[in-house]
Every structure is written in C-alpha cells, then in structure tokens.
Length: 182
Image (cartoon, rainbow, N blue to C red):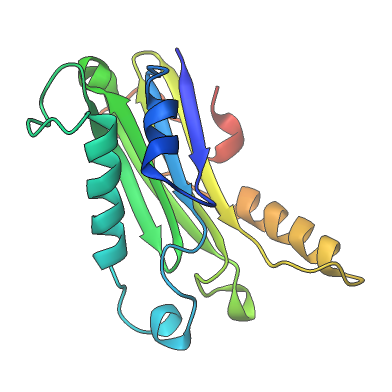
C-alpha cells in the first residue's frame, strides 16, 4: 500500500502533476486555512465554495483531466470534511475503492474558548480491505511565547482524548479512536 499525504502550503498545478505521476494507492490532501479566518467564517455558515473549487482542481489533476470519474485508472474521493478553514480529503485509486468501508469522521474544535472550529482537528477513519487507517489534519495555535508549546501539547492531548468514531453494527470491529488504528 502506497499512501501519499500532501499538506498544501503553496500549491501549483505543476507540482501536483509531478507528485501524482508517482502513482500512489491513496492520496491525502489537507489544508489548514482553506477559507480566510474571519468572524463570519468561524461563527457564520460554512463557505463551501473554496472546497468545491479545490476538489475540482485536485480531481482534474489526479484523474489527468479525464472527464469520466469512474475510470479505473483514476481516483475517487473516499471521504472529505471541512471545519471552518481546516479541510481533509482522502482519495483512493478507483480500482481499490470497492475495498473501502466503514468511513467515519470526527471533528474536534480547539479554537476560541477551546471549542470553536477555527483551530482543532478533522479525523477520517476507514477500512481499506482488512486494514484500518486514520488520517488526521490539525490546525493548532501558533506562537513561540512561554506557554504556547504547552497549550499546543494540551490541544493534541484533548484531540486524542475526544476524537471518537461511532461503533458500526455492520462491522465486527472498527477502531473507536485515533490510537486504535493500525
């Protein structure tokens, strides 16, 4: 199993095409600030336009501009989730997609007052054949002042403690938290 995780800092189509030519089984794309972090985006309704635009661009690159998303050589979205500016998207090769099951998502807000989603994590849990995976995207508070590192470590601890994936009655076993995954 070849998994490729890409953290988008500065994205160019050329860079993406070079990476995709390596033919991974799964490609994980994660953003920390897919929308501007302002009061309207943190408290108001979710702005999904940037996500739709990025998913379209990524699909175009992953599938080599193929207009048929069901092409067995292409990639399909197994799971995706946005929480304010954080975005996590799991792409699986089309020929492996039938082996994907038990997709679960958990979001933990660690922003303002320890709850809002301007900081925190998105976790996507899934089974691919007989192996469980958990992909996590976090956006934690920045800073180098005294106490900032302690606060980030506390946020990670809370994310590990609070991330829960609901039990599935269809599956005999599925991890219920991040650390239970293989």
